[in-house]
Length: 294
Image (cartoon, rainbow, N blue to C red; front, side, top):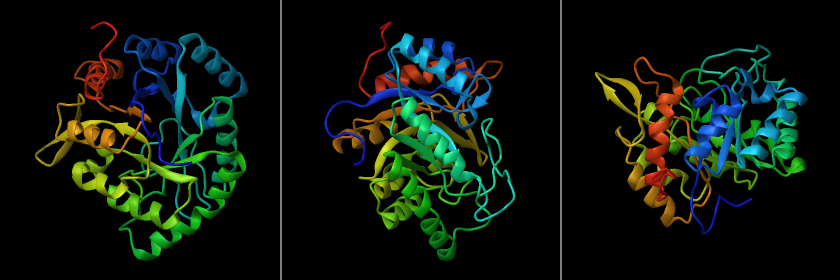
């Protein structure tokens, strides 16, 4: 699979549990903003990797009713310690069960089945909990560790979208881009998250994006700013990330995949839905579409 899109327009999506764990309600909110896609992570208090068959059927019915496609499975694959028999947690799991390294491959097989059930080819993945600095030796281990997952991805005709995640070894565009180019497989592309790059100390655009250019299969969007050194999330467009420049560059590069909101922002006294709604409206404007309600 080539990087997402050549021609066409970018499409609006959101990780549904950033709106609500009530999946049907989250889809209704996405409908209000004319979203084309829903990214699946947490549904009814259950992580995508732990959904039962009955929950899968219910989710598929809800998606058909809403007329919304699945943009990507936001999985927890390789959110674990490298080559460890312990099911350790060193960052946010979003309801996912902790799994050891060896248990990750059974998870990936299930995720591939779910990708076909939900008619998407994209599965978001990570590169292990960060335990100290990324060294050349650790980077070599990461590259080698993806050999088996890529074989599984090939067997199931899916694409692994390697996300830059500050709690994992590959937090910046420079890091994830370098590793993805070393792996050099059409079955592994990049889930580009400018907000995570900001968390990792990188200027997301233009600096970080230059390293992932030509590799992007999926995009996550959150925004933030630093106060006294502390990063705080905010409505998209109100932080320090140059999303106008970022989306202009994506258009120039003919990206026509999904732009998926992962706001992380909850206003004081409000809910995650309260934080997501203004960001959905902002994203509609930024990617060149107008909200259905004007």
